[in-house]
Structures are given as structure tokens and as C-alpha cells.
Image 1 (cartoon, rainbow, N blue to C red):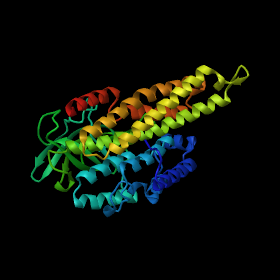
Image 2: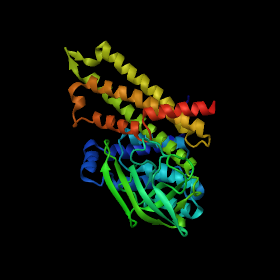
Image 3: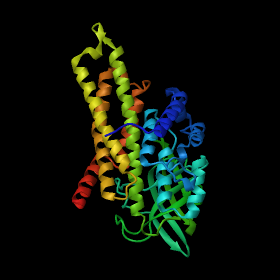
Image 4: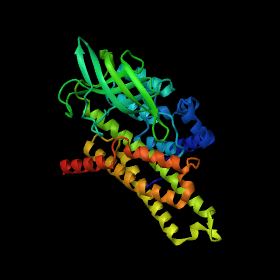
Length: 381
């Protein structure tokens, strides 16, 4: 597989790397997490000026007509520098849903504001106790004339703490766990009846639990066809999972770099510990796991825009499983080779381990994606 970037991808990667290297020191990032708002508004505006927020949108919507692989290039750098801005929930998830199902009016209004950096969005597809099953939806949308009245709870909504608008799934018909009868709605975060409890995830990024209590939704806020949202939900979740895997790959690369650097400078018995064969073997294993993960991340990113749900789902799920298992064990090895310093909050290794840990469980953990891969393989023959 050719891992080489195109000229445009190299430009995006280098520009983003310079921006984040200059702006995201360990201390600056930790201050943003500790003191709020949990991300940098200046960096978000810089994303807009660089065209990152326009990257995946078609040219006729004011975008750059980028692909899911272009989004991967960006996500790798975001993970490598532990960026906190809500790029995935706003651009990949909400932007993806709008591209796939939005009306002309919705696209014209919302995508333009996303591209300019004036609108942040989030997508809530899971609920308390659903265990990653997006079809297990108890949130109800009851028809009231032409409007709908929404009531329910969405949990662990990535970026939901700072979103201006939130796309939520609700059941307009059918029973809980049915893939039929689901509809997407665009909800103003400050609408009457909307309550959100924001918090920091393990890696410092923001999330929220969203409670909807008799929230009135007009027809203009219905996203896509009523009762037929499942296909859109699946593809948006796959695109988000692929982007998170790319972020995790960027963090993985930094874990390896920090570990290799430490093996070169830490001395024991009068020599660098990197000269000890056992540690060399562990380091080699980590590099091999990274190379394997890189292949899978590239493949899942190439498939993320595919309309073939089975092929796309298998590519994404296999990547999630591999990074969840092998990324986890590599992080354990990295901490062990660092010794005591690897366990301290002051040392930055732990920040990258936390980013990978969040990616491991967001949009489905290893068990969920193993089961999903098996189901999709059986169904597709």
C-alpha cells in the first residue's frame, strides 16, 4: 500500500503540524482543559482560515471537495498533537450528516457557518444503557400537527458541551432496537426543554449528556426522510470511527517516539537502557504494531465514504478492534519501559495513552466491533 501523501495533503499536514506545534504545548493544553472552555477558539478560527473546516464539503457548498482520506491526514495530526477542538463532531459527524441527508436550505445555512467557524455542532446517537447499539433508541418524537415533540436522553455526546446545534436520533415509529422508524432532528442547544451536562472526557476533550424534555421541533429541523435515518446514522458513525482511528494512529506514533527517545537517554548500569535486548524487542514489537495499524487506518479511511455498508463496516470495525487491542498493549509496554515516570501525571506520555483509551471505546469498543465484524461477514457471505 502506498502511504505517500499528495502535494495537497502534504501542505495540509505540514501547515497543521506547524500550527499545533507552535500553539499546543503540554502546559497550554492542560490549562485549556483545567480552566475552560476546553479548547482554543483561536485555533478553531485558524482551522477555518486554513480551510480545514471546509475540507470535506463539495465545492458547490463552499468546500474543498476533499475525501475521507484527506480527513484522515488532518485527524492524524490532531491526534499527534492532542488537539481539543471539536473537529470530528462538527465537521466529520454533523457535516457528514448534512451532506448525506440535508435539504438544500439546511446545507446552505449550516454548512456555510461550519466552514466559517461560526457554528459548532455535535451528533447524539447513543443513549444510557444502549451499549453502543444506535438502534436502541428510547427518545421519542411525537407528531404535533406539522411539528414534533422530542423527549429523551442522549449520552456521551462528543463535543456536546460546546455545540450550538445538536443532531439527535429519535423514534418516530417502531419499537426500541428496531432500525426502522428512526429520524434525525437538528436541535438548538439553547432551545426550551434542552438541558446539557457538560464534562471532560478522560483525554480532556469535551462531552455532554443531553436531556430533551418536550422540545418542539419544526419541520425545517427534520434531517432527511422521516423514519429512515438508520442508513445515515450508520455511515456517520463509521466516518467518525474512522477519523478517531486516524487520531489514535497519530497518538500511537507519538507514544512510540517518546518511548524510543527515553530508551536512548535513560541510563542504567552505565549505558542507555535501549541497549538491553529485551527492551529492543519490546520497542520493535511496538513499531510493528504501529505499521500494521497504519495499513488498517488507511484502508478504513478509504472506505469511510463508501455506500457499501458491509464493506465499509468491516473495514472500520477491523481497524477499531486492532487499535483497541494492539494499541492498548503497546501503551502498556511504553509505560513499563518508562518505569515510574511513565505513571506520573506530569509526563506527557500519559496524555497520549488517554487519547488512545478514549478512541478505543468511543463509537464501540473491541467487543462491539468484533461482534459487528462477524455479523457483517456472515451477512455479506
